[in-house]
Image 1 (cartoon, helix red, strand yellow):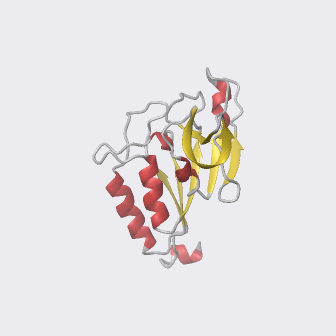
Image 2 (cartoon, one colour):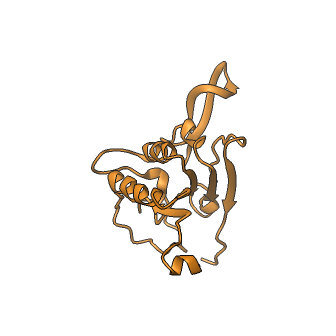
Image 3 (cartoon, one colour):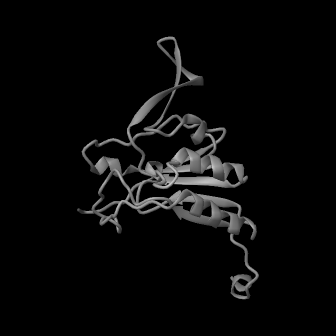
Length: 171
C-alpha cells in the first residue's frame, strides 16, 4: 500500500464488470435496477492494454449482471470473444457467475453419450472457453429461484479451479 500511495504500485488484478444484463433478480442484489448496458469490447481491451503496461497479471470477470450474457452492442463480440482476447494477453482469468442452463457441445473429449462425444457448458459458452479460465466461482442463487438448481458445466480440473458461493438471506 505504501508503494501504491507513493505512485509506484502496480496493479496485479482487475475486476471487469462486462454487463448489467442478468438472468436472475436476486432479492439481495445491489444492482437490481438494470439498464441492460454492456461495456464496449474495444474499451475493455484498451483498458486492459493500459494495465498490462503496468504489470497486470489477472482479470476477474464479474459484475452487476451475469458476465456470460455479455454481448457488445457495437461489435457483436460475446463472452467467448472476451475470454479469448484476455487469454491471448497471457493473463489469468477468473469468472464469477450464477451460471445458466446447460447445453451439450460436440467436441473431442471427455465424455461419451450414445456414441457421441460431448461436453456440457452454459448456453453459448464454448467448452474451450471454460478451459481458458483459471478459476470459476458459481453463485448458488439458482436455489432461490424458479429453477431451484445450480447449473455446473464440465470443468476440467487440470485447467480450472471450481468453487461456489451462496448469500444466505431471510427474504
